[in-house]
Image (cartoon, rainbow, N blue to C red):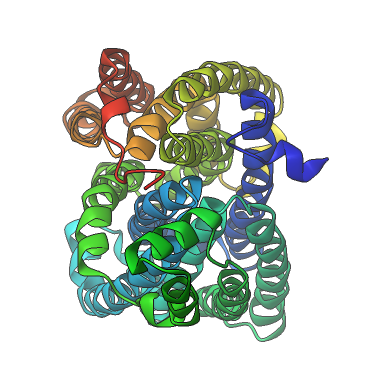
Length: 477
């Protein structure tokens, strides 16, 4: 029954997308929970300054996390379309091509981050009392960046093949391992900020290796489809030629294809930009927050971490919409994409109502997990103000995510990229120009404004229907 629900090409659109997105939501929540555990453990066992140091680092590390997620999402669009068209040989080549390409990219980014993080933290006006801990955290983090990159690329590949339950299991394992290592290294070994960073790197490293082994076994299970055998037979002109082609299919499954790389990169780059918008915005607005002192940074860090948890179902719905679009366009069924888009709107509204309820009624005890009102009144007030305000507007992010998901899944990325850049420009300019005059709260006032404008631009382009003509492959040939 579950496998039928996860059939994105033939099942009921709303039901298929919901059950496909559900493991991604649960898995990403586990990932966010162990990120939250970093802050909760450090804030309670080490102190407010350590929490602020991890928070100041988080804005920086999130940029690289979103680059990894965007890379995987963009590259997996090609694999999804080949899967929908039952071109399994090309699907395998696409997966291998981008595993190789982004492995190289991750090493280059790790070197950059390791060497440049002190200068960037200085440019962001990181308070002196947390600067050394922030640098230490980032140096350990960037040493393990290739593992994090590989893990996110592999998770996107699983999702592209409709197997979103596998990343869920791996994320649960990684989360439990990370939290256990956090407690041991911080409470047991008293390593402080360094222990939190090391725990994250180890957990992601173990999970990425396991993910790679599982993916290789799954890819090995895909054999030539009937359509591929027929194409090989026609190309060879005889039954003997067909058998020969079947026998040599391993040779035809190239590990790296330049044409696929260029085609997929056209999708991956805007996807990286889109996924990085939130994190780049947080990084560029961090300097505005840093000017208000380490207590404000600690409170902002708490609010930012809570926002990152709340947006999980919205982002997962957008990712599901992207895979749904890619597979159905590969199968030449654009009208089904529209049905799925309308169903996704209903899903987003349901999530949005639930998030309003949580943020307005339970903000006190939730923020108290990070900072206590009695011990850090300024940090507590900052965190609660942030969380309560953005709680009303998560639905805007959801609408933006699913609309962007259609355009990304179709490969129609030009306007989609422009819309996300406008979102970034609004968030950064309002925060930088407004916060010195009107106070720190302007930083989060700009967030829903950017989401809303992004959605309007993407939706108006969706309405043109141009995305239907952007299929990256020719299915059925």
